Length: 311
Image 1 (cartoon, one colour):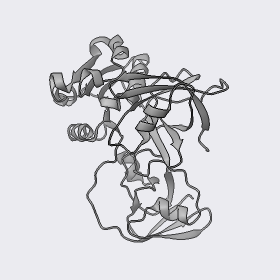
Image 2 (spheres, one colour):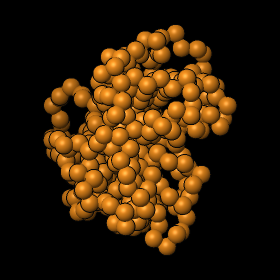
Image 3 (cartoon, rainbow, N blue to C red):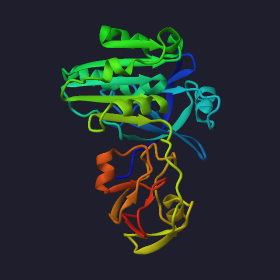
């Protein structure tokens, strides 16, 4: 299905914390926006060759506006600077999505862990868990209290939310939250890579759901050449070492949606008809990788000599 893509207007733009800017987006004609679920993200098509993904952090029931929060990263690749400097109220921005690779699954209880701007996908999950009558807690860390967005909204949840600014409390006490989990608990975590790595060390994969803003580091290996067959046309494409499947099939004329090209956004997820993928993404779950039914062709390769893809 072709994803929703439209030009929206910035209805509001304001700071939410030190270095964090919140945008409220609206259709210029007041048309309702597509439905979304907690954990979904949106592609902002900021300029040619400048696309970035941001988690929706508003109310899924509100079809009139979408809300995203953007952390300015001085050492970034230009996306956050563009948002902070150029997207003032009244500005237009093209969007694509929403897309959700971090959905909130039903459970009787949850443990949420957020670090920094990782609070954005978690925020609507809290409201959904509350509405479902689930038992939940949130551990939310940041460099300082001033750098942590949405603390005012979170205050409404009382002592179920633990704020842990590093300059006041030190590193997050993950043991207190994650050791000895009650049965049927799901853990949701979003934030910087070191936090996710630490949480993964404490939680069995069957209970843990994560979203990464940066690709997970993987051991370097020697890439081998392999063949990709485009099932819809029958055309064969050779993928040389150190060339991605995405680049190879696009050079051969295949039309493929893609965005981050780092294996973190899920835009290029493609159905595998035959063959065994060598998964190198930061999106698919261990169960999805084991099934081998799809792959992210921007980073993943082939365990063998041949893949047939639904392209």
